[in-house]
Length: 268
Image (tube, rainbow, N blue to C red; front, side, top):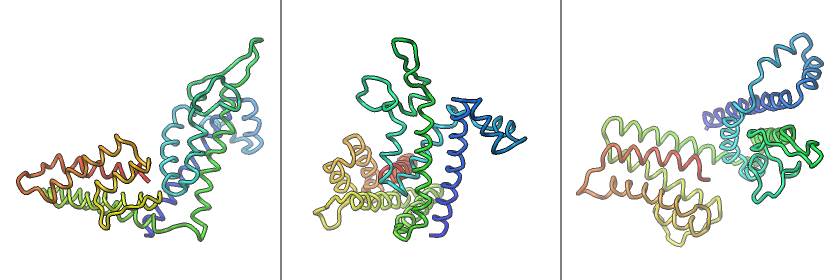
């Protein structure tokens, strides 16, 4: 449990630091004169070195966004849609205004001008959006400190990671069937937790992967392509567990383990 908590905290603090530097970077790129003035006020003689070492926003943001989004989806899922909304272009969008501008527009260096040539909106409109994303990420820190935080989810995530590591080790030593069965158990338990997270009721007392996946599809938690991918994983798991006429190949077991790892990291 402690290993899982420490890992999440370390990842969180690192992402908050990176997010702060990205906020500085976009602020500097949009208004370098003003930013340098503020940097000199804060850092004195070290201001120029500080500014020189800032990342280039467009180069670093996408990686930060993907990592932060993954962390928020696990630890503060109620704010995930807010986090994504600040990045993604609204659909449909007829005009580019301050209200409809998003970070995605900034990365494409989009701007809008009026008939008189004056700027309506440009990349500087993304600065407060990045600031809001950083604030959402910082809210995850408060989540750790709250007595309402459900530590069980962290423990479960840590346990699943350990079991999939064990499956990898079994496959490495050519225990193909046990590796596939263990990965299938992780997938089944994770899907059951996803059903619980979304309040999806299962009529069957001991549902398998197929029943859990279908229930999630019927509840619109996953779509048809996702359901089919999960069913393919279930087929390989069944081959490892039940089919004695055909031996599963190491490649099939490896695809199952990789697929389960992806599923537990992207489906909540």
